[in-house]
Length: 501
Image (cartoon, rainbow, N blue to C red; front, side, top):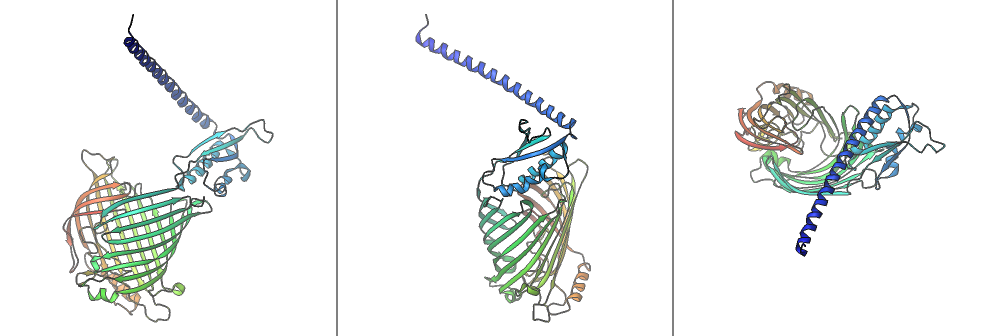
């Protein structure tokens, strides 16, 4: 006869055996269910494939779990796919495509968790109003949280900062987003912004944005600090072919202040306040497969600004335009890619209302060139006109570069890490003739000067890492062509950003 202790041992062994048997039975059940589900999905796929031309009527669309989103906002998305609102009848293939497009549109608002699932069902045939072709559509769209708050630090391109960012989503039930951002740093001393953007007519490709901001930036390359306060409003539109347009207005109070003791006469003459009132347009056509580390495709981008003309007011007047292009060419399936890019821009001075002659450009509006994110091998703003040790910017520039990107040995082409060999260069010039001259003749002389001599240039090698939020580069650069007073940088440099030449 077993003792009480032996009974406990026997009982525990029996329990363990029972649990093991239950687990085995559960595993077998899960395996059978998975196999049945897989077969059901295969049968569903075969059924759809065999019946793509079958006539279908979408009788209703229900979006589930979207509790904070306005009904009217959602109706603009789903009402057009109801058969009652269409003249042409559906086939099963057409219906599935339209439902998929509506689901993708919901996903692009950024207020729902991904993925958004869809299932179809037959309505109750006992209902007199139903027909054999009727289908009910159910969309499971779980909403994301109301807000996100992020804090962190960033470093790169001769700057480091700490930031806090808050985002409020679906503010009024129509996919509105309110973003608040604040940062303190070494170069951008402080920056604060508050932006609200909202889709127009429930269209994720048509948005309106309004933004207010204030910032203070130390521009050590020009011995001053720039303070900005103002606001912008934008209309953003993306076409079906992927072209993106931005139309905007900005009113910005600018101040050149906190001059260094050794500030040049040019910078001292620019000190003080100005108000810029301008309209802008930006166009982007980006067909690159992965913008931070493209393997194939191309980019074309233009940005234009008109300030102080006609009723725009302000105390600066000019037309400013920039253009950028990039192409990526793969070498088969080796992971080796050749990228090449060109950039250029000009400032065309205009006359303010009541003045006969145009003013020269101001340091706030001029172009600056050089640094780890554009013309590598030169210090930040190291190219172009200088007054003493101060970079004072230019009115016309052209820059270009080419990079050969190769996979790192033993790491593989699937990783976002590449070895880079590059050559880049550029010219940055002030407008010939200066203030009050004939602008057209001055521009012609300046453009002619761009090709008179070799561009300032550098070559080098380095490592590139494409993180999902930014691209990181560490390069060894060797300047090849340097002009008087330009500031080159031989040796190692580190860059981080989302745009590189």
